[in-house]
Picture 1 (cartoon, rainbow over the protein chains, first blue to last red):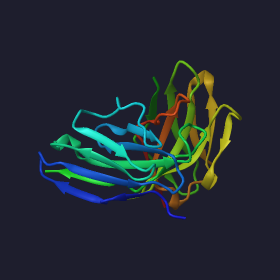
Picture 2 (cartoon, each protein chain N blue to C red; picture 1 turned 180 degrees about the vertical axis):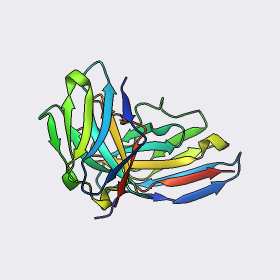
Picture 3 (cartoon, helix red, strand yellow; picture 1 turned 90 degrees about the vertical axis):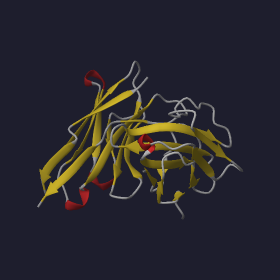
Picture 4 (cartoon, rainbow over the protein chains, first blue to last red; picture 1 turned 120 degrees about the horizontal axis):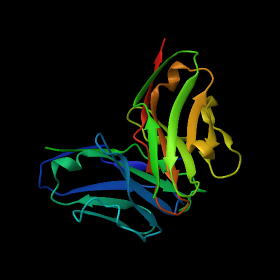
Length: 115
Length: 113
């Protein structure tokens, strides 16, 4: 079946612009996770959703970052007023439910470059 | 809070040799532990996980890992390396809650012919 998909696969944007990154989870998966992979910081957990709800937003790097999920499916990660330090690969994962008993399946990522 | 340390950002082994990738965790309670593999331009794929059952965990592609509480380690091994094993390997931990995983910095495995 279809895996987790993310779009766009690559995004180049100018400093100060807003960007939206999209994640389509595996059908039927109620939990969705966002991670950031960068050279300096490695893989960082940003936020997760159980259904449409994000219980803890403290992992988001700054208030320029926001995420939403609608209809228990697609999620968007929005970065406002992008900065060069936002350049990274943004990975999305989904699992049947939230919790360690359920494997997280990762998408291929969106490579964001801020110039 | 969890933290995960992977010793060696790059490991090089000859084809057919033993693969050993090191992972140590820091936690006040034994965490749940995972190894993921990432091939170029692809997402992460789960190799194996430890969830407090057997301390020796077998995964896909011939990999296994042993949880050693006394050493706070969860090293990944494979008896005989194959060229297709060349990839980035990540150790990760969870405290058991429903939030995300804490990852190590990753180890790039290079296989020499």
